[in-house]
Length: 372
Image 1 (tube, rainbow, N blue to C red):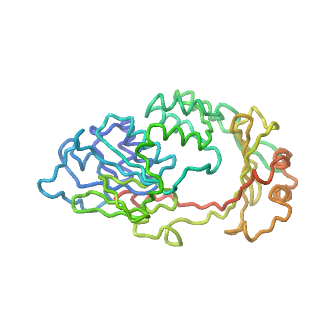
Image 2 (cartoon, rainbow, N blue to C red; image 1 turned 135 degrees about the vertical axis):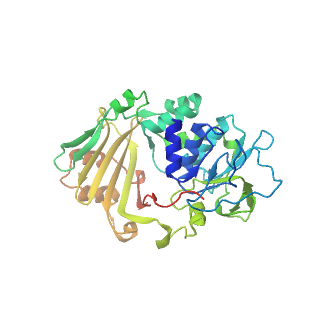
Image 3 (tube, one colour; image 1 turned 90 degrees about the vertical axis):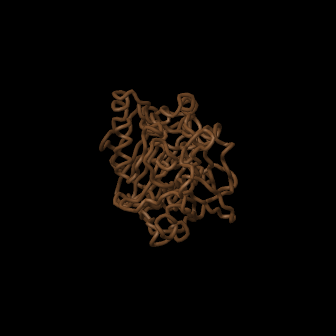
């Protein structure tokens, strides 16, 4: 695992003293930081100095030096302080990793929203994600596992939407079993969020969205919040989503718009979530594909199912495409002639159980640094 972490860190231009930081923390910081940026102080040479505890740099960028006389040691009395921009799943997992470590690290999660509300549907946690959670803490993992609906030990795959025949079935079970990893599962997002906040809520600030940051000559970071407040730390990790203000500040690009790097995917999605007794208990999820559209049905546990209808449409089609008889009948018309399984679930879905949103994407930034 140490080797894997070092290789991942090397490939993303992050240099890290692996002797000073447990690999679980390093990997989690990397995953959370992938949404935005990682800001740290100066380069250093001695074991466990403040700046080399985890040093992030842009490839070929010069490393600043700390003022003479400044304390660089990370100790229990002078711990490394990490600022986490974003209290979503990535930010909260990192917070748990830091909270449960024995390293001399403190943290503050800065979340933009003033109140956590139900957002989106259940989240799928693949086997490697569950294994990562287990590596952080067995008790934390057990709490999440208790809320899980296992799908990776069942049939999953792609079907021809019209002929209703299997194109391919994905074997998610064998790879997990060979590696002694948990199966892929789904967990309700609010329940996952509540579990992740049990140990970290005392360091979570709501209504504290990070809009930008600066770095002083000593290498410390000052995060500037939307309300004008400034918060200082040694490290800033952007886990603030696809429209990350931390990333925008780091790359000197706008948060939104043509130069932000975020583009419309070309698809709008309708999502439904409901109690449903007509599902296939042998299947975790099915993807029905066809020209310019596809449909997904997945078991989310406790007698509930979720479906998605992906349609190739221009941006903002929700406001431009009329649906006088409602979304369910609209979709039934678009998927006419497709599998009866699609129509069975659409017919029993009520209008208040359906939401629509456009999908946006950000191409992988393999050639661009995620850190500075």
